[in-house]
Length: 81
Image (cartoon, rainbow, N blue to C red; front, side, top):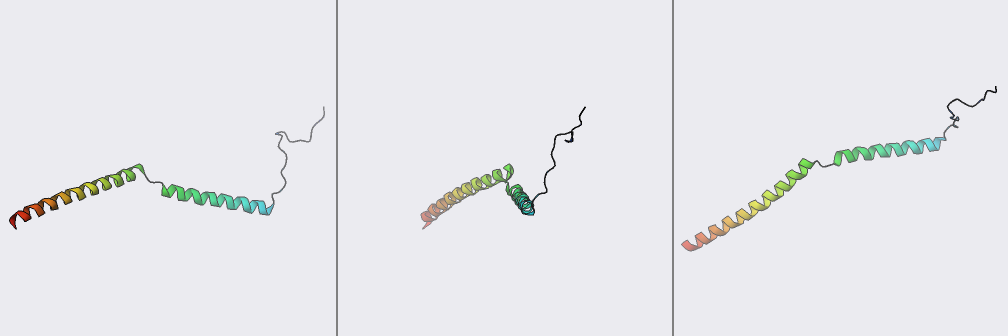
C-alpha cells in the first residue's frame, strides 16, 4: 500500500501573498467598510418620510386657510370703507 504525500483534505499550500496584493486587498476592505457605514447612516426611515409628507400637507393646507381668511377680512373691511 503506497502512502501519498498529499494532504488528506486535498488542499495545496498557497505561496505567500505579495505585499502589494495584501495592501490592495486591505484598502478595498477599508473602502467597503467606510461605504457600508455611510449607507447605514443615510437610510431614511419610513416614519421620517411619512412625517415629512404630513408636514408638507399641513403647510399647504395652512397656507390655503390663511389665504382664504385674509381674503374674507379684506372683503369685510372693504364693506366698511
